[in-house]
Image 1 (cartoon, rainbow, N blue to C red):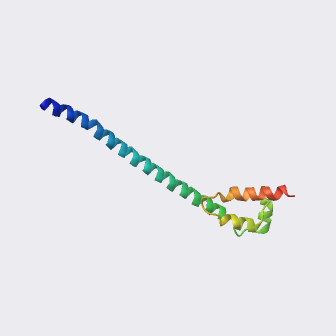
Image 2: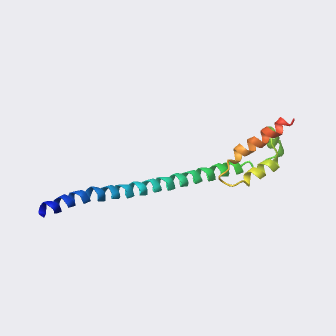
Length: 99
């Protein structure tokens, strides 16, 4: 009977270690995903802050960029997930195609 208990105990241990490792790995992946999301949100906020520096410029600045004040104001109001610079560039490209 002692041998049976010894064998049983040795089989239970790898399962517990495997479960603990899987839980630890899952927690680490979750934390990594949260950190990546936080970093992405921070990058988006900084990009939008830089983009908003375009607001309030004189009209000649917008003309030099090939856009209008209204277009810049529209792009600045887009959700953070949307790259305002890229959308403004698409809008500018569409406007130039019509010329």
